[in-house]
Length: 132
Image 1: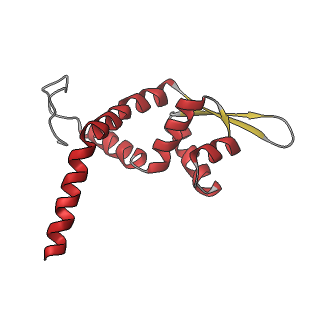
Image 2 (image 1 turned 90 degrees about the horizontal axis):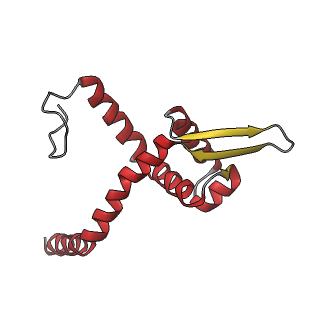
């Protein structure tokens, strides 16, 4: 079993298939590009490939393409190709993608709430390391 948490709806043991899915999703979304793309599409709505890359910033076309494909496969975004020359492709969040973004919004709130505590802990740790 992965772990127990207070808000879990069921006292039943965690289904191994569910645990595998959770681990897979965390592995994919824990990468910064997925989270930044979710955040960018939430903030700006539907965007073309080039616009999305510019707004995310510092992402290569190869990594943007790879991340968008995985997000599309997982149902987090939609990809609409317009039959024009040059190619015009739009990306937008699905309801599933918006839900994931909302779930991870709580991480931002937690980080904001505990920012000073984390910075103090890091400074104390660095000072202990320097003293060794």
